[in-house]
Amino acid sequence: MKHKIQKVELFVGVIILLGGLLTYGLGVHQLLPILRPDLVVYGTTLIGIILILMGCDIFSKPTKEMQILENDERNIAITNASLAYAYKVTLPLLVLVLFALIFMGYMSKVVFFSIVGVIVIGQITWVITAHYLEKKM
Image (cartoon, rainbow, N blue to C red; front, side, top):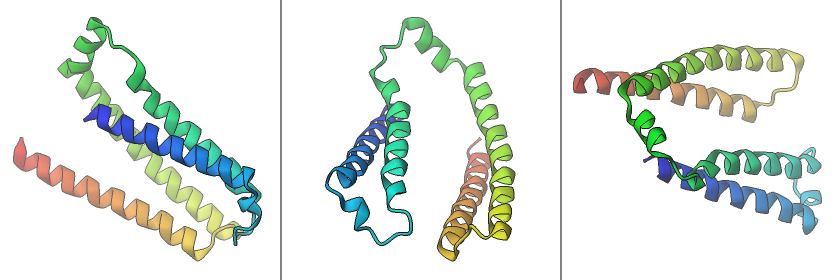
C-alpha cells in the first residue's frame, strides 16, 4: 500500500511540475484568468517538487534491518501516535491561520470554503476511521 501511494505521489508530482514549467515556457501563465498568474509557475513547481520528494523513497533499496524496523509493532505504534499528534496540532493551527486570513482580508469565499471543506473531510474521516477500528479491534 505504501509503495502505491508513493508511486501516485511521484507521478502526480512530475505531472504538476512539468505542467507548471510548461505554462511558463509556453507563456500560458500570462493568459490565465487569475490575479497573480506569475505565482502559478512558482506554486506548481513547489508543489511538484514536494510531491516528487515524498515519492522518491520508492527508489531506495531497504536493508534487512529497515524492513524489520518497518514491520515492528512498537515502531508502527510510535508512527501512528506521532501522526495522531501531528493531526491534533495541525488542525487548530490551520483554523487559527484561516481565522487570521479572514480578518486581514486575504481570504476569498472560494478559498475559505475549500479549506473548511478539507477540515470537515478530515474530521469525518477521523470519526469514520475511529468507529471502524473500534468495531474491528
